[in-house]
Length: 293
Length: 149
Image (cartoon, rainbow over all chains, first blue to last red; front, side, top):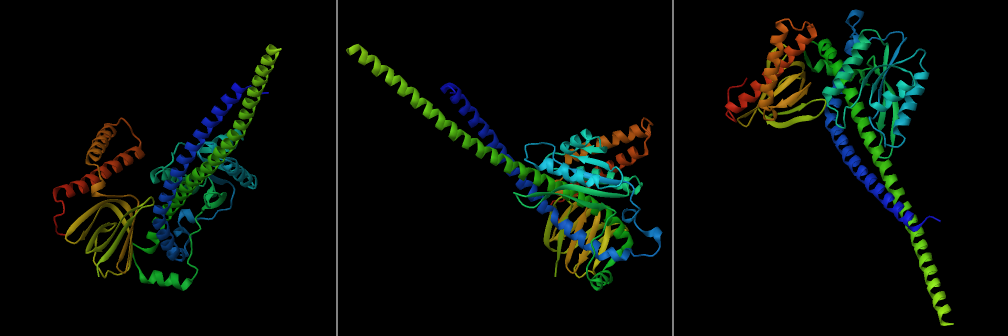
């Protein structure tokens, strides 16, 4: 039987752990809210650029091949690039394991070894251990990455693509579905598949309606890199939100488990204490009875 | 019918303002003034100062390139970066200018040769100068109406 003192010590320790996990849960909750606020702030730009690009997309059916923007060029795929976005830290449940698994599955499906750009320590460490071809890494972006940080990343990716080091680039990150669900996804980033207006007449009307300065082509070509910047920024922001909500849920479970455990231990402790008192009483009563005789 | 102006970046909504009478933007082919009832327009913007007037007061922003869409009475500015004059920290901008000038001198004396370095320093010098210009204009004439541009 565990001694009463051991039990008491154990209870204190479990209670302290619960305090820590509870604090972590609150911190994660507030960081998640902030990440979501930032995602809301980013939406108008995303919607606008998507709308304009879709209106202009068919204007790129320009005939002469030389005019096609380098970010739109489809090449036979030899080397695939993967931008793998993960958290820097753990304590967020199965999120990191799920992300790395999804990226591994994706990479094994490729005909040749993929070039990896790792954002976040967890993905970097995992793929360095797996001896994957990690060509660049970005870590310690923090909980509130700025567009300046992420556009460095997207610039590197775009340069890699236009220089022909990679023929297609995918983006792997944790999609934020809701607080309880974060889904690892892999989607194509480059060459850009511009969103298109479903209605060709509408697109035509759009191009007719506007004056473009200097020209539709020029505007379109300048929009494309910003579109990639936006997609990368969005993905990184979303994975921050996913990380924080995964951590919040993991820490909530930990706190719940700790308080369950504390209850059980307290019960055992009380039983042991009762038992001890009973034994002591019996001893005293027995002793007194012996004296009386 | 006055203009509604929204200035947005990838990161955030910098400003949404209604009842704007006139807007002057740094277009790639020179300054560009937008008045109500302007034709639908989509243009690229250069580095520079964006000013709009509203109820006799002027507000100015430092813009680091981007796009402007005018549609009906709604003007959307998709800036690469944007900062309102009152957000600019003059001391920091001065320090940045001093740093950039120092670096530029070093480069010109041939202590570093990289072309990319030079371009970067020039860009940061340009940026700090622009921010100072925008911030100081506000300080000189807070709220005073001035002829546009």
